[in-house]
Image 1: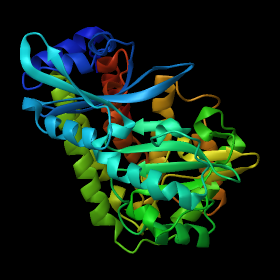
Image 2: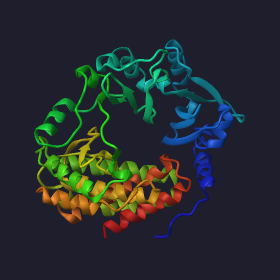
Image 3: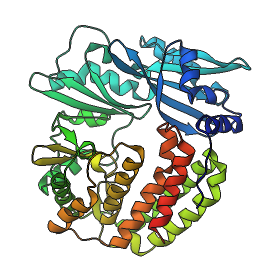
Length: 418
């Protein structure tokens, strides 16, 4: 297939020109335009776009010798923005409503910091008021959760924030999400421990999960993606085999089939909205994946799968590993996790975020050595699905040449399902 070549800035301008319901879209997609609006240099790191409805971006800006996170949101007809600004003011926040662009006098862009995040606000206030004390965290003087010494490790607006905090014994990693985890996260954690899956301790009371929050001691020197070795990958493969040794209560077939159909439909719609020239190609790739996964690709014994398995979900400390982030754990087939790992490694090489030697072969070696069994063709099909669903990531992650990156993902998925 011939790749789509669109000059980087042109792709953003074409998208903004098509979506007339979001007059602020061009501003929140461009570092220079958003910096000009804010009066300070910012770097956009993540976009969540709903065509005709909203565009929400995370950005980073200088803060002394470091950087801090912020977000900007534009919505059709400024829906909900005034209400969110009032709520921020009530809680002592700093959310601002700024004019989107001169030709659109009524359009505004909401801009704020993590503490102004309306979706995370309730749980963050609980964490600051009660959760940190329960964990024994040391609170330096100062108002506000983030202004009192926490380090932000990751942030996705209206989704989750991961913080590094300090308690009396050791640093803590705390993740707060907008919503409590689906299912019984505490029960799953106990299952994982019972079956010998190497996971981190879960700190805090049941109130933590009710407030979308989990905490564990900081552990390890790195993750597998940022410099893992074949030995570490083999250890991760053995851990994955133990995970897949847990029988799921729900049947895998119908759940996996529904998951596949949802992923294909959502991705096709987004590709068509972002780059209309790729719509037919995306539909053809989706049809191939659907054919390969129908039946054999989703059949087999139902096991617990990680649901988002990749090298960055494996922490490495010395000779040991720990699997993390089971937010998307579900009933499924083993090939889903194996294919996900392989696809994520390939995407990491494309984006330059994967370092060191390839790890998938070593992971599979450890998996089989520990008794894991899988069907290679089915694993390839699940890898194709991960590549396909990831085709929108170059846009979301603000890759400079994101249209070409999307095309590359589609080609990679096509080649895996002949």
